[in-house]
Length: 65
Image (cartoon, rainbow, N blue to C red; front, side, top):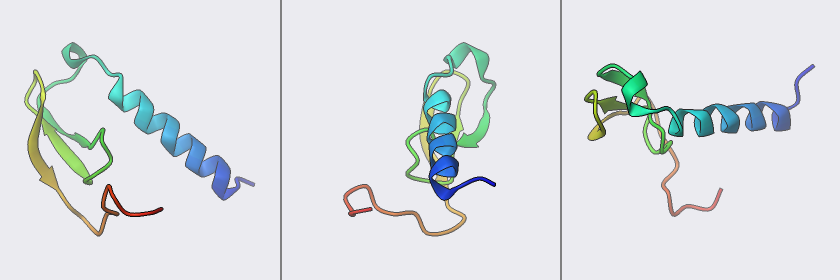
C-alpha cells in the first residue's frame, strides 16, 4: 500500500528529473510543465516556451500550500 507521502515524494522526484532533462534529448512538443505552474508547456526543440495548457485549476505560486 502506498501512502500519500510516498506518492508526493515520487511525484516530486519525477518533476525534479524533468527539470534536469538535457534539451538535446527532447524533441519539439508538449510536455509536463517542469515548473509545475501549468499542466503542460511547449518545448520548441531548443528551449521551453511561454505556451502552456490548463486542464484544471493549479495553485498559484504565491499561495500557501
